[in-house]
Image 1 (cartoon, helix red, strand yellow):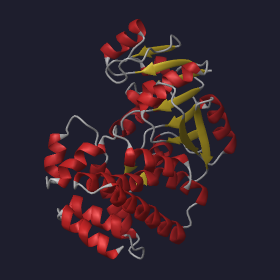
Image 2 (tube, helix red, strand yellow):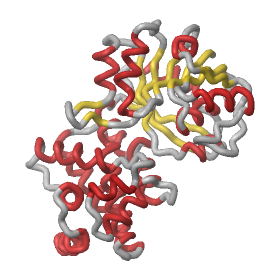
Image 3 (cartoon, one colour):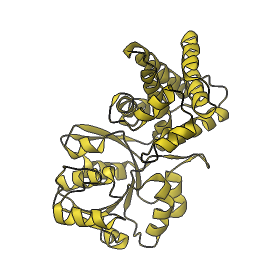
Image 4 (cartoon, one colour):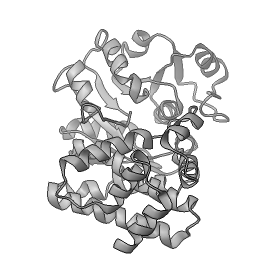
Length: 326
């Protein structure tokens, strides 16, 4: 099958490698000329996946139209801030191929999933799948056993995408719970950030496990009130994602939370980590808006984290007060 991937960062390159291993031809769209030259001539993307030798089935290009033409499926793997621009460019050349949105985010201003932009900028009822994960691109590119969740309302489209991606070590679970598969991204990040915060405050494994469990408990409260599909709670989009983000030393949020444990402000940390995409900057705003819309659901852990990040509460005192309430 002919596949195109828009976005040559680490996750886009890892997906290109996965598709190529599965005997597909891949055109990888990039905005960086040097990356295109290295991928095509050296079969490597050292900017994002150094040391990984890429398949010769992968062809990089600076031309989006060339990448998309004659493709059977298009993967959107651009940074969230670039998605709307990318979709507007894609609209001029899109030919009703199956789309896979592999950009995870939630629009905090409109309080809507990114899938909303796909439908509003392109068309309703296009063949479209959301891919949710918390899988380090380095591990995917090294063929480490990995799970992701594919979500959409059409089971046939889901099956087709799963067949394209899945192999002996890359597994796909399916879901029709499109909204919560995307919104869980924000909640799992805030739980993970709580775990990294207590690590920075020099608490040990028991405390991290305590907050990990409390976070799951609070998600169950949300489920009971809002009737989320139970299968979503045990999917790769939730428990897998939560575990990886809460425990992996590769987590980009880990450094940020060590700064927070030392009483740096949100603004100071953003300035110090300008070179990193630190998700909590946006996650906390999404969760705070959700909590204001659902004030009847008591969420003490999420409340503490919102107040520490957005309202400069003392992290040590806030955690001590939380432990007394649990």
